[in-house]
Amino acid sequence: MKKLFLLAFATTIYSNTFGQIYWAKACEISFFSPTSMENISAVNKITKPLLNITTGDLQIKIIMNAFDFPKPLMKEHFNENYAECEKFPNAFFKGKINETIDWTKEGEYKVTATGKLIIHGVEKDRTIEGTVTVKGQEITLSSKFKFTFADHNIKIPFLYSGIIPDFTDVKIDAVLEPYKKN
Image 1 (tube, rainbow, N blue to C red):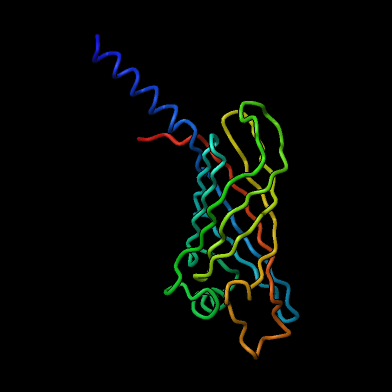
Image 2: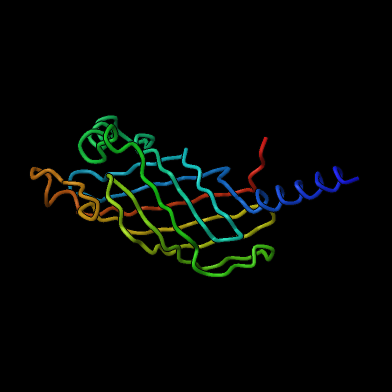
């Protein structure tokens, strides 16, 4: 009887802990920079954000060389000259959703997430606006924000200064589902 109670207790703790973690079943991060020569855009579809709905903690790890570009030369320049992917293979956002959300109530919520954005080895405090949509067992995270290269020591070669803007527009859309341990 005592063993049965302990097993039931452990199962309850386990499901309460892991039942509160959501991770991406689909995620798309993209960026866009308009230039006078040609627009620069890329999409990354392999990122897996994690969200703890009990605490509001949000973590996103972005594999930098996983961005797909319309032209191979753009990808090469991005990986070697701007992101320096060999030296800085990942970018991260580690933060917390500031607003209290009733995760059991379907709807769309305007939110902000405050945390550390680490790109190119440089950590910056950021508060990023977005939207959380709760529908059934799925949570959708969406955000659009500007990213300034200089904030993270990403240098634009002199040859392209004035052509490439000093910022890019970033967009993230992720559909999360409860994490289930196999």
